[in-house]
Each structure stands twice: as C-alpha cells, then as structure tokens.
Length: 628
Image 1 (cartoon, rainbow, N blue to C red):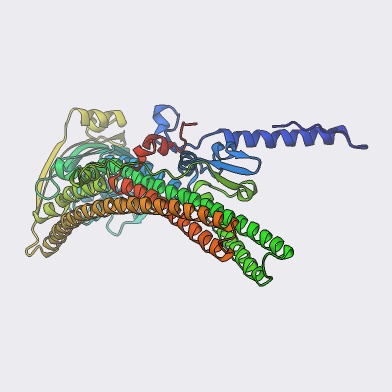
Image 2 (image 1 turned 180 degrees about the vertical axis):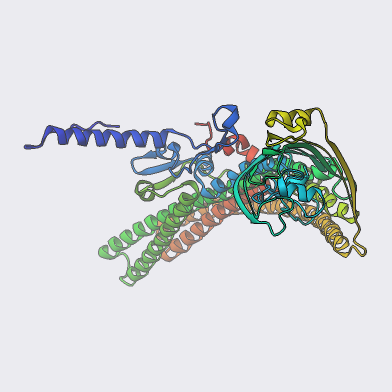
C-alpha cells in the first residue's frame, strides 16, 4: 500500500490533528484485524475454577460477516482474476449458505452433551410447600399427628418432595447428572386452639425454621437414588412442651427403580446413542452441502467462461463485419460496387453489434451470480470489479471411465446422502425401543431407610435422653436409635393398552417406509449415474462433431475470401460463410461447455467433487482453506 503524506492546513490545531491521526490509526488497525483474523467455529468451555465452571456460560464466538482476505488479494487494477480453484476457495470461505451449515456439527455436539445428562427436564421437583409442614412427634401439632389425629406435611417421610409431579409421555431417561437441592423456610405461625387439652393455650404461636437438603442421582438402568437431610427447628408457647425450643432432624436414603416399563440400559441410553450418531451424520450433512456448493460454483464459473468466450466470438464477428463494411464503402466510392450493397453491409454490422450487446449483458449477469456465491458482503470495490477467468475449457482425448457397476459402487461408498440415509435408518431402529418398552406394564420398586432424632432445652422433667441441641439429635440418627425401613411395589396395567399399541405400530410402519425409501433412493442413484455417464459420452460426441464442423467452416471461409479477392465471389457469399462460421464456433463452445457441465455432474452423482477439486472437509469446516 502507498503511504499518504498529510500536510498541516493553516490554522489547524495540533490536538485536532492528533485526534484525526489516532482515529485513522484505529480504523486501520480495525481493518487489519478484520482482514487478518479467521472466523472461529467452536464452543469454548469457560475458564473458571472447577467448582464454578459448570455454572458459567461457555463462549460462542460472534458471526463473521467480512469477506476473506483472499478475495481482496485477487483484485488487480479493478479486476478480479480467478482460476477455478480460486473461485472454489472463495465460495467455501465466504458463501453464507455454507456458513449456516457450519453450525450443524456444533449443534449436534451440544445436543450430545445435553443427552448425556438424561432427563426430559433439567433438575428435579423441589419441596416448595414447607411453611406449614409438621415433623411427626415434634411440638403440639407433631404430637397430634403422631397420635394419628391429623395428617402431616413433608416432614413425615424422607422420600417426599412436597407433592410436586412431573408427567411425561413415553419412556424418559432419568436425570444422570447429580442434583443438589436445598429449601430453607422461616415461618411465624399463629393457630387458634379450640381444644387446648394438648397445647394448654388458646392460641398456639410458633416460630419454625425448616431445612431440607437432598442429592439425587439417576441410573441408566431406569431409577434413581436420593439422599435427604431434613431438620426442623420449632419454638412455641405451649406449656405442655417438655423441650423448648425443639429440633427434629432426620436423614434418609430412598431408591426407586423401574422393573418392567422403563427398565434397561439399552432403553435409557438410546437418545445418547442417537446423539452420537447425529454428530457423525451432521458432518456428512455438511459435506453434502459442501458438495452442492462446489458443483454450483463450478457451473457458475464455467458459465461465465462460456459467456466470455461467446462475447469474444461475437466481437470477432463484429470486427470482421465492420471491416467488410469499410471495404464496401471504399469499393462503392471507387465505383467497383453498386450503392445498393451498402445497406446490406450496414444491416449486417448492426445485427452483429446487437449480438455483442446481448453477449455483454450475459457476461455481466453471470459475473453477478458468481460474485454472489463467493462473497459474504458485496462491497463497492468488488461490485465494480469485472471478473477475469483464467481457466479455459479443456476436453481430454479420452475419459477412461470404469464400468457402470463400478461407478455405482463408488457412488454408494462416497455420496454423503447415502451415509446420512444409513444413519437415519440406524437412529430410527434405535428409537423403536422407546415405543416397544411402553407395551409392558408399569412395575416400580421403592425402598427407603431413614432415621429420626429429637432434642431440645428442658422446660421441666423430660426424658434426659432428648435434652440437648442439634448434636444430641444427630447422635440419635447416627446411632440409628429410631430406625425406619419401608419398601413397596407399584403395579399399573392398562387393560386395553391401545395407546402404546398405536404408538408402536406407527413407529414400525414409519421404519418400514424408511427402508423402502432408502431402497428407492438407491435405485435412483443407479439411474442417475447411468444418465450422467450417457450424457458425458453424448456431449463428447457432440463436441467432436462441432469441432470438426468449425474446422471445415474455417477452411470454407478462407477459400471464399480468396475467391472474393479474385473477383469471382460476392459479398453476400462472404457474409453467409461468416455467419456459418460464427454458428459453428458457438456450437463448438456450447459443446465444450456441455461436456464440462456433464463432467461436473458426473463427479457430483459419484460423490467425488471434493477430492477431484482438492477440497478438505476439515478445512471447509473451519471456513479457511490453506492454499495459495
């Protein structure tokens, strides 16, 4: 870049110039950063201590909307010079449709992380209604409940969660990430006592603090274990209480496990296996989009080459016609030709000029389409630049293609849509377990063991065993002075089970449909490969015929010009031969373009477009190709 020398205008203050220079330097630095950096496509884990790392958001880089540096490096004097490889590299780095697809593998990876956690919803229900909870045997209300005269709250059982319920349709994987929850409640309660025999006061006033903490861990086999630590602190005005204030803790271990419906690792890890397959399938889906973009860019590039070559042929025909027009005017002025020949020559020149104008418009239109495919943003410099294509059509002497069956085998091995179809069939087969298992009855095993304790400050002569603070109650729990065990089996049998039968039937039929569709697509691949192979052979034959025709017409025109120089041919004969030659040249150009498009299409149906053009999938995922 040329450096500019800035003079100091009269009357300009030094501080203003400093600010202007600083602003200019900042802009240049910003542009250097924009053009020098590569876009980042990753989810970076938070860099925090391990204790808080799981609660900090990961970093997802912002979108990148600047054109790649390669695009500006290829600009020379207002022209964009492109080879086929340059066009492909620019399309991979800048095409916004492919940019959208780059996030697919990242989304699949995030979905896999989510499925590894299990569960339909994050977390578990909490014990939220604890304001009026009653701890059995603690205080006036606890004594009434222990006597069987009232029902208690969440403090009566270690496995309770406050009555919260979550319903899900189908078999749901348990939450596999351990969850720690705590609910702490402070309450001041006033209760009228219509029967004061127990409380010995007409108004029972309580100060309650409740702490409920539990850790829950799910199993892939279809159950969970929960460890609970519960404590209630109670201070009330009842003269009948022997201990005041009172503490009533308990600790429990509860296990719940499905034995029929919802049982089995193979069932509960199906979404994890599907997500793992999807991470691989997402790369194949991106490869499919990359292959389509490669094909589209190649066709756009060769269409522009075709348009440029056609423009050159039209311009050459115009120059020839213009020369004949000038010669006709000279011959008329010399008296060698009648004046009636002039309008015919002028009409021919006007017709050729119209052809050039149409060809120029076609070139401009093709340039715009190619620019749209290889840019992120159309800045004024790129918009004004014309494209100079540096590659030409090349038709090899022979194609040397293997037999059809071998080409079909290559397509089945390399095409990304075939791989995606296989992955889709695998995931559908894995998902069938989710509708087959609900056909079974629901049999649930629950087991729980918990220990209670009670302590407080003595008001009169209580049992000295209960006198003390929280430590006294905790010792009772650890010694298992008041052990409790409970177990239960819950059985639920839908008598007609039509819902599960219908879901299973739908999934089975959809799976069969998918299998038939896969076979249909396989058959279509055979047809596509055969059609493209035939199209390539036909285009080669047409090119050979068009090339031979063009050579013959060149010889005819040369002979006609020689005859014209001897005065034994007319201007009309020259014009007819010239038109015929232009038509033959355009036919040869069209045949070469058709052959090139057929070759590109054959590579696409075989799934070989990327390797034939030296495109790496990993580089394409990063959005930057390391090539000159």
